[in-house]
Length: 495
Image (cartoon, rainbow, N blue to C red; front, top):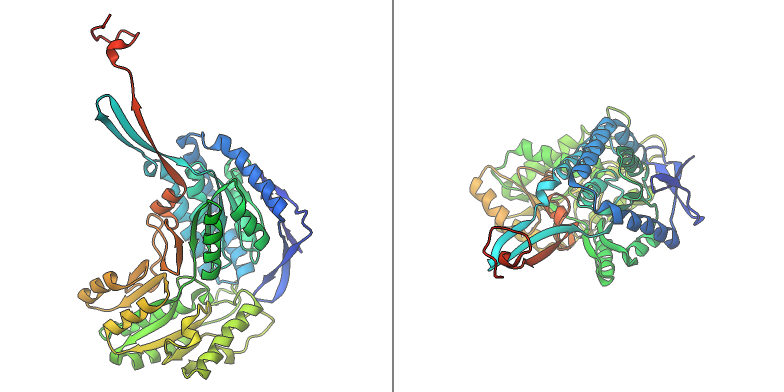
């Protein structure tokens, strides 16, 4: 059985805590490994390693850091298939989803490779007589990333490249449910030549998270996960004087206006709701059908659902894989039952689909005539369940989104440019799609929601990520009058 250890100072380190967590193949239900879970004392040793490395790393030239980032990028590209294979083995996502995750991670490394321009300072000559003022951006210090199970390779790459590009050292605490892919990514960074201690990995659970949030030598923490935990990370970390960016849960809505391209909207709803088994913070979980498009839209989605192939992620024919654990599968299935009990029409019931073997599979589900007081609407289901809410007007549909406590992403499908432009200004969400169901920004923009989907001041990756991992320092300087200099500068001397 695979034993997954910490990576500290460029080498594998076995935990001394005596605690481990199981790692499963979700497609078979079999345990394939176990991961060490760090104690608070072991977290302290990792932080000490990162702090010692920071003393030198912060003074490494931009040119050297850039070369190392390019080397890292090339190794990730060369090993993309192996990273994807590990994602499928421990998360269950199908090959296309796994390769797409790696590709989006590579985008973020490539952005970080151009960090020199992003870190350019500002200079004001002669702000006053003989006085110059300039601003430089300097690293925060030891930074930590606490990342989720649903994107175990991509989300660390939202954080790690920018953090080390800015001169920080970085500690990754990946999800203990599927730790092999992020561990391999850190191994590639070490192979690229980053000095020992610049990038460390510590596996763990709440004990490790709490120690990172409390440790006085950790300057910044990045987190992606559910809203309750994001709120906890933000409140605990800031109470301990840390810079925090914490991305929480979502309830992403997709409005479909009566003039929308029906086929395009139905295709988008199916791919956005059921891709990666719905275990995406940007998955569409609610379609808001406006007016008389509702009946044909529900039917078009239902027809497309029948064609979805659900199976193991390593089967090339599979279009959707299993959920991450048996417990999560059963939790998601419970929302189908509660939606039916509360009065929704269960158009397609994923519980009715049978699967061979012991994997954590659940079929895709479609619930129509869902209302905002139902738990299947209120809660983040995080599974292959799509709810359809019917609305009489554009204004009512937008209000429905804005009344929801989350504000991660929202999309509209329409042929009307005026309606689309109005929507992007009206809707209370951090990321907006126009005829795009999953509006995940490219690597040179930044990722983050509003309201209960985000806690902090600076969103993830891109330019905002660079701001998060640096602190501005303003220098005001005055030099003696050149005429008093002991060096002959060609000025008349006062003596």
